[in-house]
Image 1 (cartoon, rainbow, N blue to C red):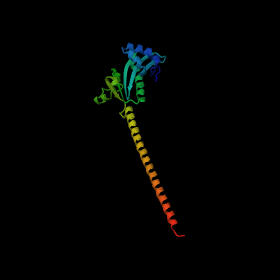
Image 2: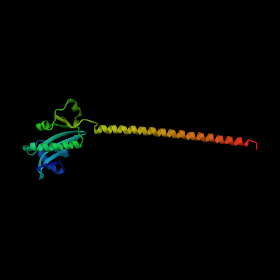
Image 3: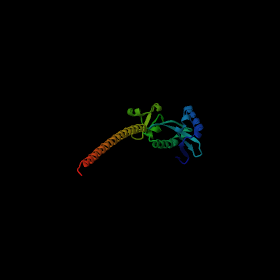
Image 4: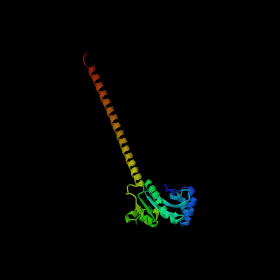
Length: 204
């Protein structure tokens, strides 16, 4: 993703030194964030100069936007929309239901639609996110991946139990069929013996 003069992409290991300098200038915990650099999207000039970065922490179907920083805050009006577009794409690709944030710039509420979290929505906030001042609902809730996995595990267990039951029934039917075959053989053998004896007593 890029404009004529700016490019937005995911951070790589090569970006970490520049990110550390950016975080320190914004008074962010660089020693903690450098271990989470893969969460960050960066915006840079066409020749690779780092201009800004923002993090997106993902837990399950929830995402938290955090640690926004710029080398020149005079460029934020130009750079924020680029980063926001990128964040939305990432959130969509991960199938997120909601985005959370503590970023306080008016942009997030005025231009992006973030609102104060409703009480019922706070139950969805992952503990790893800590507190969040604003939330954006991206799509309606449905079964989250963990719930789908639990449902699939239950289905597999039920299928296994059903298969075992069918196997036991098949063995029972096989045993009954074998038993009936033996009884039929015995009856036939008795009938043959009876006929042979009956023929031997007939006058010649």
